[in-house]
Length: 331
Image (cartoon, rainbow, N blue to C red):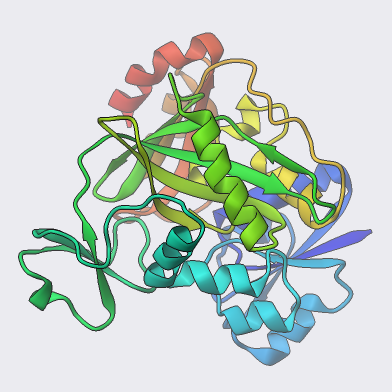
């Protein structure tokens, strides 16, 4: 039995397990929460992410170690030889270093060194789902642990998911159009219409090469009114804007991440039909109500409701995408 060890046991870990079990993989997770969603698909070690004893237990007898979110301690990932590498993790944990990496690679970004004001102040670390962001009127308001970023007038938000195996094989999913509210992803549509695919793939490929990357990587982008792509941030992991791939692509992002880190042939990323995904945030309708929506593929994460928390998602494929408005109204 091939054993995959994962630092983090949230819903992304749970979906990795659901994708890997049909391949004959076994899973072990480390998470400080005793009710972590991934406990449904593998052994759960309940301990802090930097608990050395727990990390050794996590890795013991495993064939590969990975992680399912980017705020795990880089030293923990490094000590276990995790894939993607700890170097990729470190660069994406600091928004300023991430922006500098984009600039070194020739990937356009919003101005962040001397942006015009008013500007958006972002904490350099531990920001996600819109947390750690505020508007500032002058750069004098910027705190030591923040960076200032130009306010971008964009037409839409896009993301691209790239995957590369330890063997060097690379594949890309179609560009995705995303809708956020209060900094939290609400819905995704794939493939994005009239999308600048070549430019997005070029930026993602530069990141894969520079980071000597293996696994799934998500690059979030702004498309401006004049058609330019500006990189917002990168996530070194499977990503919420790729959850639609479970039903919508030939091979899900979760299965391809596992194939990539194990050095197995990558699966097709073809997307035969249009797909829409809607997140269930804070609270969710009953399962019966969700399943009454024609063509709804429901994924619930086993998490208790609370404001701003991602409790699950629903995917609609092909002709069923027409039911998105009905689903959104229900949610």
